[in-house]
Image 1 (cartoon, protein in one colour):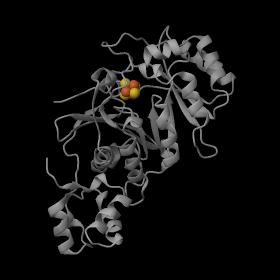
Image 2: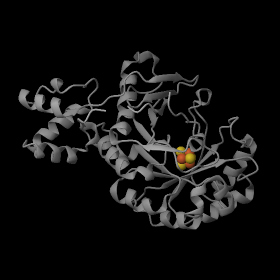
Image 3: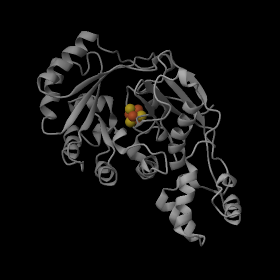
Image 4: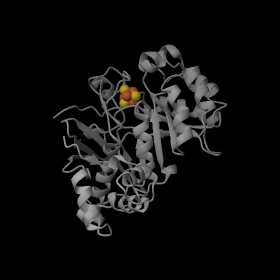
Length: 351
Ligand code: SF4
């Protein structure tokens, strides 16, 4: 690997520090930032408003990373799974979920994941490594470029990425510094210019890190709850043995959040495990003092894992109890299941 510096690892502030460190004015950092995230910018020679001698210096000491030639899989419902080859041979996955009014990109924050949730294929890989800031933001750049290359008449949604969710491989709060820097770049209008209200970071419940996320960003928070008793949750999500449900919910109650924002609780329904009327009632009671919405996800079955999805009637009955308790409750249908691109199905290593 080159010992040059990848400028896509820098937030605008870090870029200012970098250019000032080499004797340039901070204005140069703003100019570079204005170029780095434009489509098809791969070389400093393209940054036409920088002095030639400065461009030559950058060329010698820095570079601009991009993901090229992703492995593409297209689902029958229009979802696209991207596989990006990393410099060390690992493969990173992201999923584009197009809808008529939006394009949501589900991005990864780590290769593999240490959290070992028993219903998740990524969890079976174990932890391989954290992604760099550049590797996180380049997923968005590459999906944006893919959309720009498609014939307009073939697009389901807009020709840009409108929403980003950190729900791919990895636990974002276990790579929080890089995730926060990537959020700074995604939301910067000279960066990828995605509104913070259209970005969601999802966590399995790393309690000590929640406050830091809330204090340093205004993006939406999703919490993977998936069970409402400690015994069931610990069997599904080993993280619950370190931070139990009450500790997690207390961190949610005190989460630093803008007024009118609500936490999204994710609850994957698993047949015979967490899908009874009693589970719904306990869930309703436990969340009552937290500003929140609830996403019910029917489980994406896979042969490698033992869980089953409940039938539609059970899911609707579960939702009804929560609706009667005046929660906003969505039932999320799975997208991209035929290419293993749905929640919990991302699992790849080195190819
Ligand atoms: S569900 Fe999320 S936190 Fe749990 S193992 Fe899978 S990727 Fe990791």
